[in-house]
Every structure is written in C-alpha cells, then in structure tokens.
Image (cartoon, rainbow, N blue to C red; front, side, top):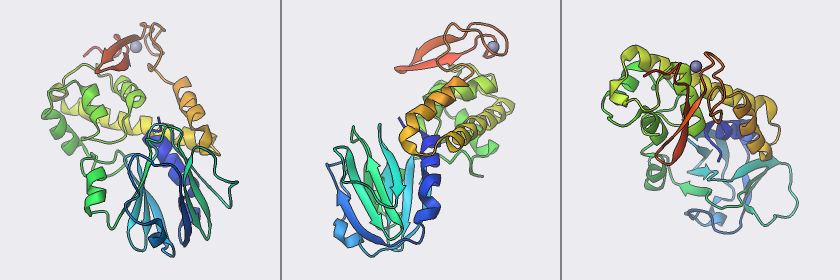
Length: 271
Ligand SMILES: [Zn+2]
C-alpha cells in the first residue's frame, strides 16, 4: 500500500512538470472508490497551478477548484508526454498541454475527487480529520506531547491512527519507536516530554529517509513496491522477528496489535 513517503515521491515525479498546464481532456475508466464529483468536461480548459500533498492525498490545485487524488491500496500515477491506449487497470487520465497524468489502480480503492475549494465539503470530508504533517512546523514538541498525554491507547495505535500526526504507517511506526527506544505497547499518555521529543525526531527521520530512498531509487513509480522492499532491507526491526537487534543483539520480537504486526527489540525498548 502506498504510504506517505511513496505519495511524496510520486508528487515530486510530476509536480514541477505539470504546473502551468491546461487541462485538455479527462478520461474516466471504471468507477474508483468515490465519484469525481463534477462533469469531467467542466474541467477542460482549467489550469493546473501546482501539486501539494496532505497526508496520503495529492492536491492538484486548479485555477478554479482542486482535484484530490488518493492511491488507495494499489494505485500508481505516471506522468508522460503520451500513453498507449488505456489498459484494463488505467482508470483515470488527465490530459494536459504538458503531458498526461495516468492513474493505474488494479484494486480500485484509489480515488480522484473534485472539490470547489480546500475548505469546501467534499475536501473537508476527506482531509478534515487528518493530523499534522510530520515535516511541518505544526509538528512541534508542545503540541505533540500534549496530544499524547490525552491518549490512553498504546503509542503504536496512536501513531497509526493518523489524527495526531499523519503518515506513520505500520512499518514506519515500528521503526520510529525503535529509534526512540519506546516500547510500542506503552500508553501514549505515559510518554515523558524528553521521550516525546525523541519520538518526534525519529518519526521525521524515518519518513525522510524513506522519501530519500524513494527519490534516489525510483525513476518510475510503477516500481513502488520494489521501493518499499528496499526500505525494508535497511529496517532495524520491521519484519525481523527472531533476528538479532542491530544495536544490542537481542532477538527482535513480533507481537500483534490491533490485527497489525509490531516489531520491537526488548533490549533497546524496555518501556
Ligand atoms: Zn536492541
């Protein structure tokens, strides 16, 4: 599943090239998770101002309105001068004067949704409950620690929930907690201020490295799954159950938390 780093890498592959383009045509394939929300024809002639990311959504800003793109479970976006005829899993083409943006999504949990503005109902419905961006100034220690103090759930759950900070998927949660030396089962409310700061830094570090790896190894986002594999190769604990910790040699342990696998080192993450 594409996580925040893959979505950010995707954004960087086409954001600059598509900025300033005029929409010439839109082709819709099979229905995606949600309908477009506007007649495709109504978008023809509008200009793309730029592409931002919010959580796992890409926001394609138009001179009037915004397109929200989500990659779902299996989606990938490519931007090229032209494409061959659409294949069975190509469900959205945005043809512009600078090239064509194509969404391929075999499982069709992805979506392209139009909203008249970022604060209009269709956008708020999708973006309204997202936590702060991990690389933004809003992800500061005071706010982060205050929000953790209010939560009785295990810290791993709180990270995954995405309403405190977005983008910390299952792999990244295990890795960040390892770097911060925090046991994934610890109640969020029990995390001290210095440890919250270590965790904040660790979240940023893990996500930044994943973006960097994606950026340096990915020319074409159709290789997204290979990129995740590459990141996993250098994982400290994720998917390493029973293997010695790279830091202290203690065997890495695997537990289930809310149906998801969690990995941690009992030596480095004592509490
Ligand atoms: Zn260890």
